[in-house]
Image: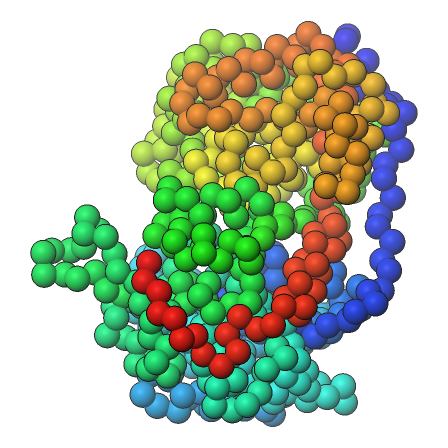
Length: 572
């Protein structure tokens, strides 16, 4: 069988893991985040703050991560058991009082994980919301407290004889929850307490939808001097106001972070461009455009130990880029698990993600009749909007021999879908970075995605004129990894790693699906070459960490954006 022949030994040697060389310019870096893996997690933010600091430590930097000491009555609470009390406390002035916080400390892979201890982080329910999904009423207080406490940690905590971090640190404030850090550093520590003059602040935007906006009357609660109100002030446009008397005035913490940070970073170059537009900026496009000369994008890496087809504990058959036979065996196993006909020649498509407007499963719903007319099999894994969960149940009943829907989320099943499918569907309307396409390419599963944000940055469009030579595919992958420093001509000669559609409509989506399925059936050598290029990329955090280092260095070279205080009041 042609498909089975194409799945045999490729003759390609897997790329060796990166060699860690110590940096010549070690820094003291402080990440501030509302969540961090494995102690607390709701999404990709936790993975970044759990994985990236470890890579930076391997490079020779001293790294601290500051996050709340959550006690929520969940299985994640056990991870905090290894943290011990530093016996250092801080008094935080906000919300009209002085609030005492403690600091717990745990060393993990050389990283100082510091957890801010206060009663407001100890309650059953979710990190940001109760069990019913309603946001906690005091979230502004909880994360104002976190930001102030994080500014105290480098000055107060003596780390087991290594001393304090001191005031020459680089703060990395993640999303609005840590967005007051740049503002506190500039408005209080530099202006009144004569410290942190050599510190730098970087705001990282993982998702601009969440901005930390509250009524303007809450400004006095934030513990910020009155003359800095201008950088937090934001006015909603008329169509977003509740009634005619509503002026739409709020304090917007993310806006304040962008206005006062030394640099701003997002999780892909494409997303950095998108958030400077009216469609992608969600009201902050004005100030982001003004700061564009200090705005960068770096794609996240993935944990190559957790996502490794050569030894994935959730998959029955191991494989790597040198021998793809195990992938075919995993496909057969998944077909049996799902109750499909076991056929090598039928494209097996998968979708993994939240069932909501952002992730675009409604595009699959609207295309389902046309898709099921093709000789394909489709499995969807996810939960979310009830209407879309109902669609999955209806589709399974209607197309029982071709469609399976799994409502919920299951890590082992997600790994088996990633390993067993031929194609992963990612029709996201917007995607700051995206991780599923990186996992898929690591496993030789080719993505079909909307050309937005990180999807557009990480997926190389299929080149139908490319050679189906494995060596060309590997060379193209290496050249792509090297970016502007690489051989762009070589990168363009590769077969690509997937398909991208530019318009969110069923015609554009199905055009890619049909082309991909046609290539799968008719040109297994080209398909294999695409798999080789996808699997030969460097998707590691090491690769991402080197780019982050450049951002840190640039921030230290430039003078502080807010040395004492900004005299110019801007309105956006």
